[in-house]
Length: 346
Ligand SMILES: [Zn+2]
Image 1 (spheres, helix red, strand yellow):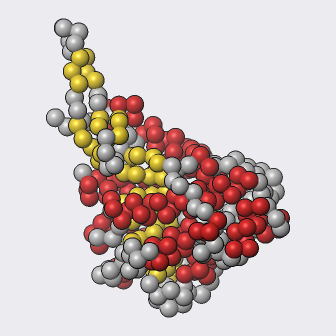
Image 2: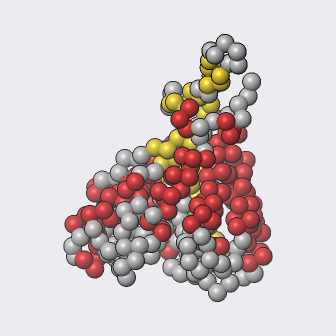
Image 3: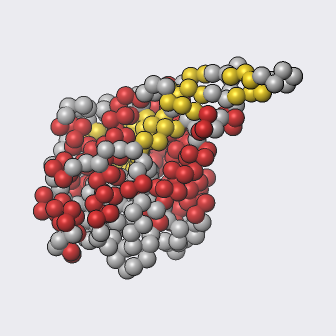
């Protein structure tokens, strides 16, 4: 007998193996007062999250920003609504591991807080929690990618941190999780090539500066706000849909152009901030389904990160977003990823 998804509650779910949960719903028997225990094995998608992702740090102007808080909101929502997601705490990256991609002097500045202008170049007020946030977030991206290579799909509730440059942070991004992960997987020969698909509203100028010289990495960027813009080189692309009603078509045609290329993994930076530039939530939900379906059909493992998405209006044509709406926007990524995971593993 199949179990209804709504019937399952996290308290009924016990980890049995690395990939499967033992689900124990208890049903009371009517007359005898006895209990029937029904059991079933169900696969669970691993998603990486640490409380260190959300250090409640103020930005340099002194106000708390949701970009460092929302991971915890989303983790709480997942625990309530998605019993078939296995939230796991990642191992933080070390100073030496991060220094394989970033300037060791910059890495040391973030660790120690000195010099201050370098340590807070990410626009976040430095504290020891910033180091923990950055190392946990980057550990989460790497763990998600490694897991995706085994399970087909995984993700991290951190951002991909696509603005971070070699020797400084930018736009709340400290170390570049997309670049660190791509370079690490290639160095370890776990994959022959990497697709970085960045659909955050802003450009991934940090990522491009770190990976564009490596022809094994294809960086595909479709943005709605030209912050952190760059001129793509080699086969990398950066597209700016002129008319917002072309948004999905631009993504669709870019994915079509990539069809048939054998990527070892897709690192998907699933920003929801295009909503602030006038892209409706329904279109972003369709985008998520399209991306994960494309990866599934192409046989490409995919690791997602959450990226942008804010509470306040950020553009002339966009809309304000409430906390619940912001959580729901990001849950659209979780939902689409889980659908693909279950199709692959269910
Ligand atoms: Zn953004």
